[in-house]
Length: 263
Image (cartoon, rainbow, N blue to C red):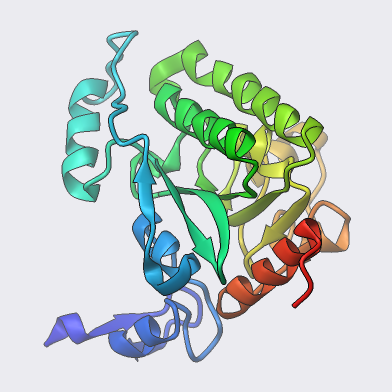
């Protein structure tokens, strides 16, 4: 019976799980947005939840033979088994209100959504497909940043993904970036902030370095709500903050505007 109920991470109320699921994983009491898996995100955005997965044959390796508390190779196997993902992003092609698009959705459940070589490669392939087929690109970022277990190979993905986005921009193909909780580190410092429209979900943590690091560096207390989506919107770092229940309709309007398709 205990599986029927859960506690909201924000307001701490005990809630019936089905009520949250029926509300797109949003707390009906305080509007807190629970995290979605990459599969859930794709199902939410595409028409009737239908899509074609792409680039499923790419798997991460361990070029540095890295080991912290456990071997990186073992950590990868554990995350793959638990999440049913090869790595922290899914690429898919489908339609949103009949408009064909490419979507990359990151999954925080796989090693904190960290960006290693495979994530960088898959994001780049999604960009290249959008470029080849002249399709709008949507990336849903949810990440702790670069993957430390891959060292410099991970850092190289910042340049790789950013240069791919630059080619998309030069070709005049729309790129909508959705930043959800959390989007930090090297992902924020690369493709996540390069959208033609940058959208945040309510109260999403978005930033590069953590607040504690920044406070220690500048020797000042940070303002309330610093690095939350609403703060970034107020200070010009985001174009909008959109509730998950309104995200599809917002994307449709944006895509029609970009593609010059009247309703």
